[in-house]
Amino acid sequence: MNPVNNRPYKLPPDAIWLITGCSSGIGRALASLIASKPGQRLIATARNPSALSYLPDDNADILKLPLDVTSPSSVDTAFSAAAEHFGGKDKFHVDVVVNNAGYSLSGDTEAATEEESHAEIETLFFGTARVMMKGVGIMRREKEAGARRGGLIFNVSSLAGLCAFPGHAYYNAGKFAVEGFSESVARELHPDWNINVCITEPSGVKTNFEGHSKANIQPHPAYAGDYMPARKLEKYVRIGKETGIGMLEPSAIAEALFSIASRGERVPLRLPLGPTCWKMARMKFEGLLEEFEAVKGISTMGRAGQ
Image (cartoon, rainbow, N blue to C red; front, top):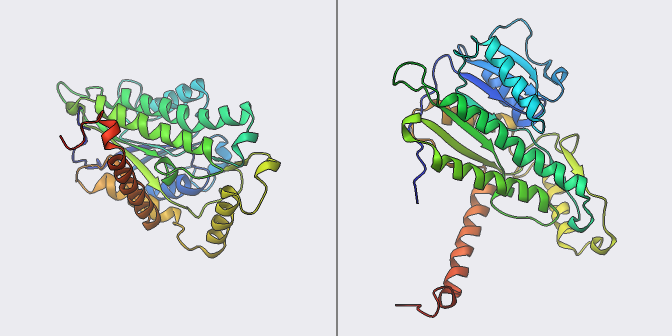
């Protein structure tokens, strides 16, 4: 299997960041952080650019754009506008792309409609994929003869991209797809292009996910009992949100991403964020190894121990 060709990456002093989903949460925290860094340039996007009013309007290094990741034409228009603002099509280079736009669809999967399930996958997976590949196409271009500036792509996944939870099947499916797609593309990229991919996997985040960033499936009566797994998880999550225990601040995630981009070390393919994610992911993979050992004889067609 081809290795992932991530290399040490050092953020240029005049880097251009393109961030999706900047209206709230992680996107807003990261956009605010980049806007505060001298020399760094920012393309902040949201479906409704009026949600970006927290950023100044009189700074040429900050560009606020409408972007709906579910619309290929919207993605094309945003990249074209960014290129025009920052030097023209032939000179434009994006150094860091952060795919953060998304929302959570939760509830009883049996009751999910076609429209709800397709909209979730279109946003989480296809939206991430089309923005990522636009970024790759720009990052791999030669800026000078034989010189490639490369870049860094953060695809914001989740603990839910590593571990599946009851009542979140389509959200899990979208994030699992982001994980597989990101890893596959990372293995395709030529090392000389100096393009690095980092899948970011935060656990619970203190955002307004209960607001416009979350959609709920109509409850199904067969799953209504308090003893059902999804209801138990909902209670656990509700307690976490009320107490703040185990929840990450968006600003802490923003600082972690900026650190990965600027520290000058090899970019990790996966970046679990928060002790909850790190522990639960490790438990899952240790459990998988135990399951594999238990079926080794069958899996190897009776040749176990040979």
